[in-house]
Image (cartoon, one colour):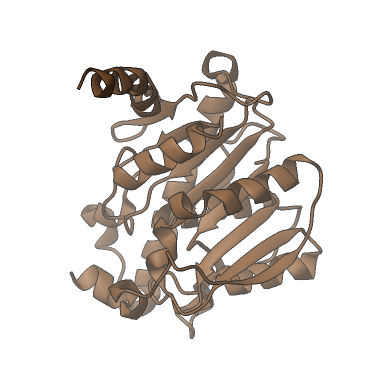
Length: 306
């Protein structure tokens, strides 16, 4: 028993340090938006940082939910500082959303919601860059990642930055992410996505059967649409920009929560970018930890009808 207690006593500091976080208010909107900063016990020499944005369909989710905590534990164990910010859940804004009617109106509502999340992520990044010394991070080594709605937010933010759009206006002038890694993300735009200036090196993780955040395009018949990984990758290739797409075959929206189980792939991509290697990879991915569930058959209508 004494030996067991001694082992627990040794391990407790490691467990508590993985759970330790600091919280800061980074902007005032209708209310205060905050971010959690998870610091590694042993930081990387380059003081790299990952801004990880939670998911929840723009109606739910928290910056400190179970998935975010798991992501923070995995990445701080690799020496990264992890920042998990709030953002406004635009689909809960019933007063604003009453103005939208019909299918095209609903699409415009989603566009407003996505841009609002991107704006808040921009403000969070601006805070992190401004306070880089206090947070012990390198502002040139900030990676953006997110799951589902969070993946849309970070991909949209870099799309807006590269195209000079208003949702990215709060980013520090001249700043760009070191890399972007969206798990089941998409870009909302009019017409096919295209980039006026270079996007950040990006790894797109997406299930080929995803019907919640469409792997290709949703809705199909409108000019303003949500373009998933398949179409975003086409835009990167057309522009000659480095990008990885990891097509997770046979699964749907399960990919959104897969970062903790694919941390080696995440870090491998980021390390390649940090080393200066900018490549384009089109890969098919299967993993015994990523199997079809109810999320493979679920549609976006099913999600919001719940």
